[in-house]
Length: 269
Image (cartoon, rainbow, N blue to C red; front, side, top):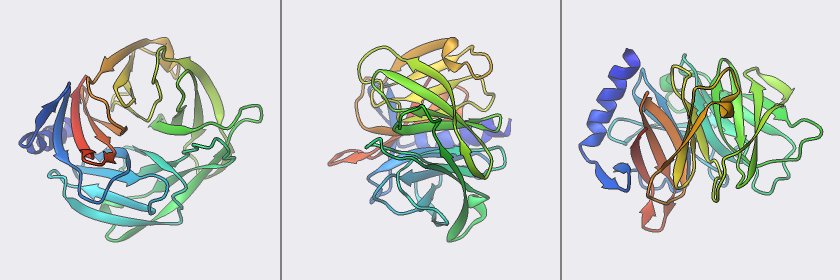
């Protein structure tokens, strides 16, 4: 109930400045200077949107209020931004930064940084690393999307054709990831750039530049064996972040490209 109330208030404030682009509501421009936003997460108790930037940018967490204004800028100590690509959050408000981008497909070690209570921090936070490697017979992949479900991270490769999903335990220290499943979303330009799971654990969204896939009616972690529905945006940009705001609505961010992009969008499932 608290999730719904907080989300409705957040939506009410944002919708005051919304306009339409394809099937997306453009809510606001992201703050000037953030050109390569690579992830989005929502802290419902504080009604904060968390964002990060990817490789080549600083190890910084940004929090935005309901008017998309900076409310926090936190240096993440104990972490390096090799290629931060996605964010996840747990029920206690702990944030997890997925440092597993791998465009050259030559990384051997990957990190997920655990950040406790960022909403209570003032200027900096300290991260604890969850370091993982891939199974021996698995080739190095580029990963850009993950979510946390039942204390396990599910991480998706960014591929046009056959993709792979791996899992990593939410446990500080070093471990070897487990290959869970191969998947094929059928069609062109099917690279997954971000992911999220609904609060009730019944719906998954996988983001692409032009569309998302909605996964429902699955059992356990057999996510691709349920219903897979493709939802087109009728809008193409470099979309990199997605998060559930209510059970039927998500927020999406895209990167800034000259005069295009750099927006926060709403999409109804």
